[in-house]
Image (spheres, rainbow, N blue to C red):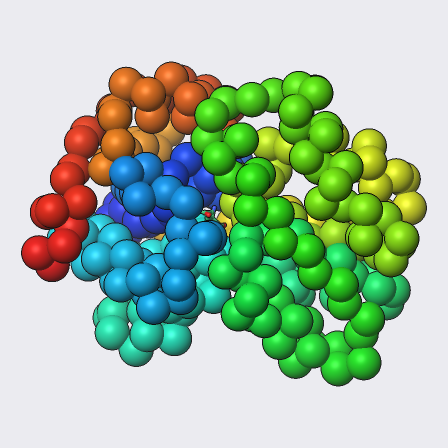
Length: 273
Ligand code: DGL
C-alpha cells in the first residue's frame, strides 16, 4: 500500500528532543525522521524569548529544506517563544510540546498541577495559559530549573548525588504544593524522571510532554499522511550544530538505541536562512 514517506522533522536546542523522537518511533515505527539538535547554542532556556524565536525560525527553515510532512517543535522553550510565528510562516502542520502536555495533565486529574521547565518557558507563562484555557480554575505551581539542562546534556545519570542535590532544591516548593500531576515541561527532563518521581512521591503522577507530543503527532499522521506500512524501520537522520561524535555518544541515552547517522551543520549556515 502506498504511503507518504516524507520525513517528520523535529528540532530542539540539543539532545532533549531525542526523548520526543524516542516516543515518535515507539508510536509510529515506520516514519522517517530528520532531527536537528542546536547543541552549539544550548541552552535556549536562559536566553531571551526574542533570541529563542530567532533560533527557532532558523532551525525550522533548515528543516524545511528536507520537505517534511510534519514539523515537531520538540522544545518547550522554542514552543513558548515561537509557536505562533512558526505556524504563521510554515506551510506544514506544526506539533508543539506545551499544549499536548497541558492537555495530558488536565485529562489525567482534576487536582492541582505542577510544572517544571526552563526559566524562559516559566517566564513566558505558556503552561499556565494553556492549562487555564482547558481548565480555568485549576491551581498551578511552576518552578524554573535552569541547571537541569546542562546537567542532562553532560550525560549525568539521575542517581548522581549532584543531580539529587540540585533537584531537592528546585522541587522544595512543589513538594509542599503537592500536585496530583507534575508536567516535565522540558524535553530534557524525562532523563531525570526516576529521581523526580522519588522526590515527589507516589501521590504525584509525572506527565511527559514528550509522550503527549508524540500522541498528538500520531493524530496528524493517520490515513494518507502515514508512512508506507512496508517502509520497515523508519530512517533517522540527525544534524547537530555541535560535535557529531559527542551527539551520537550522549544521544544514545536519550533515544534508547544507537545513533548511526549524524552530520554537522554550522550555526552560520542556519543563520543565512
Ligand atoms: N529541551 C528544551 C525544552 O524543552 C530546551 C532546553 C534548553 O535549551 O534550555 O525547553
